[in-house]
Length: 143
Image (cartoon, rainbow, N blue to C red; front, side, top):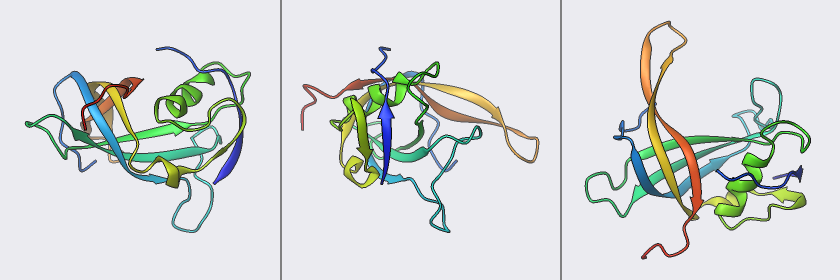
C-alpha cells in the first residue's frame, strides 16, 4: 500500500494471445512490491502496480491471463489521469490524495479493449503480448 496524489481521470508472458476486441476482465493478483519488498517502479522511477487479470464472460477465452501495469505519475505529468481512470473503473478511491491498496483490487471487474502488440524481449527476439488499450467500468456486467 502507498499514497498517491491523483490527477483527474482521463477518458479514454504466459498468457494466451487474444484476438483484438473487447473483453470483460477480473483482477486475480495485484502486486506493488518486488520479491525483496521494495516498491515496484516504472522505468522512469514512478510507483507501479502489476495486475494479473483473467478473461470472464467469454466461453472461448475464459481464464486467459492478461497482464497490466498501472503507473502512478505525478498529477501534473502528461498521462497522469490514466491511473485515476483505472482506479475509478475498478471501484477504488481515485480523487485527490488516495491510498493505493492493490490487495483491494483483487476480484474487481472491468471492461477492456485489447489489441495484440509486438515487442522485443531482453534476448533480442520478438514476441507478442495482449495490450490493454482502453479500460471501462464494468457497470452492467452479468455475474
